[in-house]
Length: 109
Image 1 (tube, rainbow, N blue to C red):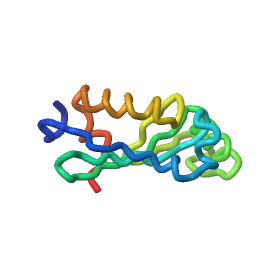
Image 2: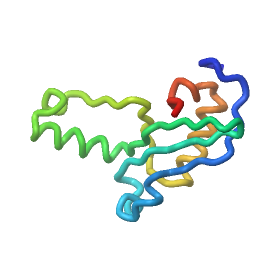
Image 3: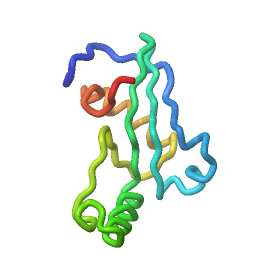
Image 4: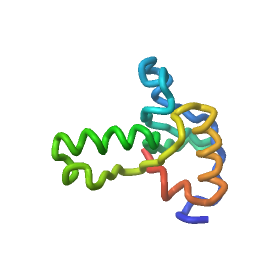
């Protein structure tokens, strides 16, 4: 397992976009923060972006000049997904844990 975490037991996965109706209207084109609550009381977070949303950011950065006119983009604890929905995010979080990459992807709150 990558990182120093031994066994990870998830208590709850909270998707912030679920609180913001406008972000959930089109889960294929958006982003959300995801907070994972562990059974041991610790919380971890990562930002999930759809591929489509990243393309929008890139095009916008070409216009604004940010990130060398859209030549690159980065974000801390960023995960790219097909869509920002519970049906996609929950299994992605489980897979990240199963692959032993949780502490590499998520940061502790």
